[in-house]
Image (cartoon, rainbow, N blue to C red; front, top):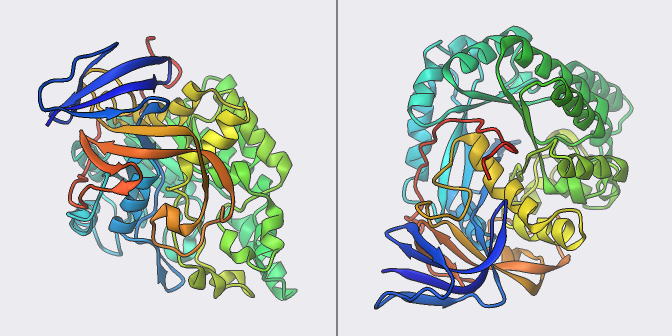
Length: 464
């Protein structure tokens, strides 16, 4: 059935205008003023509302196993995504010992099959380098997985890569058209600080933050960028949390280095003082939330387009699981939920507070992620022949954030009790309503795997 969305204000990365929009066979087929609806079309009146391209969350953890606990599964994560206006997300596939990347991908897709309200893609984790083969990177790219996650930390979990391994990965990715994304922190510095604080009996959530000061991130970001530059490959820095990292990225971009970066709402909005409260462990993540000074530098980096993406690093554990580490941060499953609040929080604290325009918001949440990670031209904007991934957003709707309105897995939110003005009311994935007037109407069998194409489509350099 054709769907006509009438009377709304369409917002893209480069323009905002009143128009109607016609959807047929999962695609946008016409945009214009006072369009005539085809016979039998489902007509939705979007008067007074914004019509946005679906949000793409480029950094999501599903079924993450930490400290004996597992984070939200595909069904719960994608349900929360749909209520929050996220129509596509990218999550991780991490091979086990002795497992090839393709074996891990097949297992991951089997877990997701029939369990997704929205579309998903995969980043392949290049861990346990001794198990990797040179042909795996081109094999993944051919399979529609052109981005690869690496770490400079977590040796005890078998995730960390040496400088030589990182460099070899950059060479291979650069040769075959892939993108390496890196979790950047200096492991030696962190482990030294953990040992010192442990000996002092300082193991609270606030103490955990002291093990990972901003310069620990900044130093690792600088090292990784130098390797990528020398290898002639682009690099994507995940979850930038500190002023030191932002300054390093600025220097690299001034030098013409091909570096992309993301930050997260919790780094833009939450204060390190949260970690010192009675439930501080519920705010614990890696890297940690920091001071107001760091937050301001990150907002500046967004406004200056040094950081091109806002993603969530969504890792949704139950409050009980987080609370097990209240007296010992080594027992906390790190991470915070965020996929359901990404759009309304960035609207409230970005657009409504005058830090971002509505077009910049779309760029950060939809268009740039699509360009960087190979989802365009099908996703990331509103134009004829793109996928009909559409969000209808009420800029005047006041909502108090709670687990009940998020429809996710966990029983808490880092933003519990916060009232925002502006909330998604409808979400459409490839022409199918998933959420309509804040009611779940779609199927968990709708979402499908996204085979992605060419990465790094030069954000900020589009033909407009």
